[in-house]
Length: 236
Image (cartoon, rainbow, N blue to C red; front, side):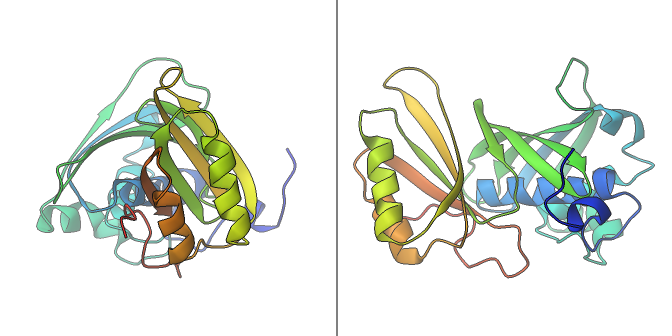
């Protein structure tokens, strides 16, 4: 395996005990919270593989709960996150799943928004050193690492949509580092995930939302200095 930097090996600043089972899990929970766009009212958490076998001992359950509360990996409240989530009105259940997954540290989250009632199904894996990949969002196969500011665009799979999206990015002088796209069916619903070199401006996000085939635009930014629009549908 090749590493881009030393942090890929030593992991992020964190509350332990494990970069993969704790820090990575917290980042998955936080990414899910931002994709949902609000604190969940209910969270059904299912662990698979190594996560399922060790989640209580490694505090993976508490890490997920902390992430859903939007705690960073080094937040001192992580050990008390399950209790804090309950105090905040979040109902969380944890379970062990069966079946084959491409990585042993896999978790599936089924969330319901506390304000909108929006439902979200998300699958994430912790690949080591606190690094993660979100591999499924509501049945769309994606790749979202959380290492960069990320824009999620729900749109229809029409001819020319991607060209329009990339043109908006060009005009906004925002470079795409990685793109993934999946669709339900031809000319049906699609999800495009753009990992960017820098955070998209509010104007750029408004221009994306204005495209005729685009249904919603959301932002995920796991950096501590994440901008105010993270995880919210940009409507104006």
